Image 1 (cartoon, rainbow, N blue to C red):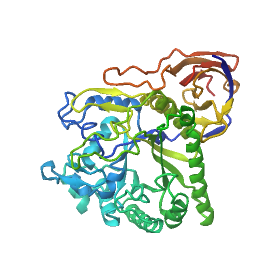
Image 2: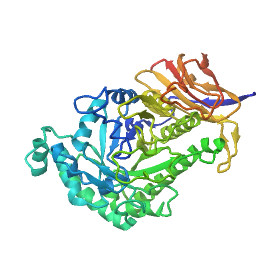
Image 3: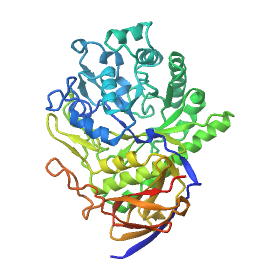
Image 4: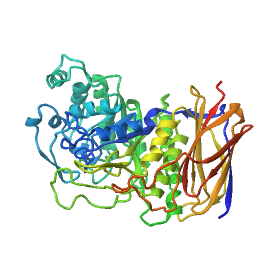
Length: 504
């Protein structure tokens, strides 16, 4: 084994942007066991009086997730929100066409709002622009956000919710260019509908912010032209454009898999450029921000829905994540931080059971997947201002990428606490890496801790029977002397180096 050399320079005078806490958002859809058997499991020993699992609540609270997108996803394009409010005994059981299941509607808007308070998060609500449109959307805003004195707000009060939910952020549909979507639309159809729906929603509540749908992925034939056309039609009335992207290692090519954050980087650059093109075209003063409200490793993405139709909450897309998946998630988080000037919201999809960092057995155990830990560290320690980190390391070429740096890294400065946090992934699968970081602009510094997540087995996983097979430890090798940090990054590792600096 050899030792690679890498360098990093950070200066508190050179910044990218303050981190919007919503960068660490997540997503819960009525899909598989995300809701039923995940957050809601009335038969579980830890369930509260409303059926919410307390063990799941605690695992999610530890992640410090500031916003959660709900209720979909593909699900929302066929969802009648009125079916999920009011007395549970009167709610309809319906065929759910997005995932070919039966939706009981035991959990709806109000229940999810209650649960969100329990985990300390805000709700990013989505409206149905597949089978429905302006009227249902404006009524939902009135139901959720208007204080009282109107039909829909008074209906909410009659359902036991005197105070409005005051949901701030709303998605205008989901993946509307996807042929799998109920009510899929052309860019012109969607752009016109999104614009008119946005107007009506903001007339009900001018304080809300709205997210228009971008292409379902950069691989869509509609990509780029879709964004440009949609924004040309609704730019003035929306606040964000959504991006969705998933990655996998189904070809079992780990060096190429770990390089896929370069694709995410380019995707973000491209969409930001399209937004800026429309801004220039319209001579607008508004700079549109991005919401990467679905992203993750999704190895089962090509699989079909549950084989037996019309089950209630069958297991679907319950990917088991490996150590290399955790490294990829770490690289994606670093990429998001580097784009904190444009990406203000992001949602790891999803949160529990469905391609998720948290797994449960219905009425049974809960355990944390490998991907839980990089997200935990970034969410809790990546608050503050992203620094313009100058990074140099050896590079490699892979199947789809050239000049891939073995070191993927960035840094965040929390000025209030005087803490600099360095997030770093050593992509090399065989060699450790010596990282030298110049932090002289911060004055005196001392090491708080160096957290490491490593494994000799790239395919190692956490399971119900072995839930701590791959977990981080605080035994990283780092020293600080005279404005220089010297750290040893083990092969194929995720690293969090936290430094207490002189404030001011």
